[in-house]
Image (cartoon, helix red, strand yellow):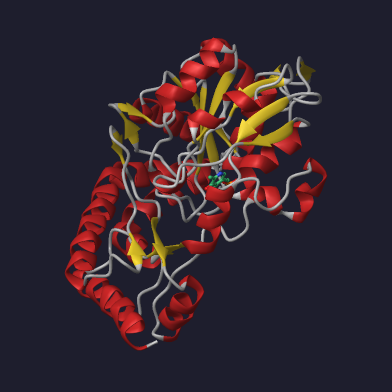
Amino acid sequence: MNVPLLDLKAQYKAIKPEIMAAIEAVCDEQGFILGPRVLELEQAVAKYVGASHAIGCASGSDALLLSMMAMEIGHGHEVITVPFTFFATAGSISESGARPVFVDVQPDTFNMDPAKIEAKITPRTRAIMPVHLFGQCADMEAINAIAQRRNLTVIEDACQAIGSSRNGVKAGALGDTGCFSFFPTKNLGGFGDGGMITTRAAPLSEKLMMLRVHGSKIRYVHELPGINSRLDALQAAVLRVKLNHLDKWVEGRQRNARRYEQLFADAKLSERITLPKTDKGNVHVYNQFTIRAHRRDDLRTYLKEKGIGSETYYPIPLHLQSCYRELGYKKGDFPISERAAEEVMSLPVYAELTEDQQAHVVRTIADFYRHA
Ligand SMILES: *Cc1c(COP(=O)(O)O)cnc(C)c1O
């Protein structure tokens, strides 16, 4: 039995007629950049997230970058974020001209530890960029309280967390801006790159809409030095169809997470495997089901031999990446992140995964610890 980490073909098969009709409509219209399809998606995402405005752009990375541009964050500024995340989080800060400043994560949720933020604030700090890693929100009450007290803005990296919520408020409506990615492996994935920014602030929204089209509201009149970061109509049409199915897919992921909990409990693997924990008040959408595993790399090799997909998100914390040598960090600076990088692996959790496949995954893991 083969169990891939993600099976996009299974999802596509179930919605193919709807998707093809949406693509055909765009082809008939021959309007490909922004336009009514993108506007329709923006309005639907704003409503879904509970933010008043949503602005489509070319990627999640650009959503982060555009947020900083709109807040006039750049050279000479610092933005506080975490080292245990996808590179784009910190990469977008560097791209803006600002300097990423790291704080460690919490061991249970892998999200930013608010208790470690204040010590890193300097006169140059402009924003805090928490990541809702793997699909559950960071401790936004604590983060927002610090930001308010120290007059900083909060940019949510919600790229993995569309649909997740904290105390009833959805990711993307918790900070000053929320940044989403429609990369195909995210819970709401397009047929290529795409991204979106949500915000409750009308002036920020207006600025973001200009910045994504070269800083221009009226053609060839440029009020701001913007960039080209637009969402395609084709992507928007596909995403609009998929958004209707998102909650059902998320429920499938949550059901599979509960099933893993039961299967792992029955297999009595608690000394080898640590299951993901959901923080109080959070609704977890499981973009990844990430465990800590004893002898992680050997286990992953074993699973691969048996046809079971897994991945390590992320094997090298960002403060130890060679491109960030000049930031002056060293091994030992963020021990929780470093340890997570050594221990974590993600298992298949997509909605179409069958009960048999999940049982097979857990049985194979149990076999590994029994024999290897
Ligand atoms: C996917 C992702 C991004 C970047 O999104 P792209 O659309 O690939 O640019 C940023 N941050 C996190 C945490 C992500 O998972």
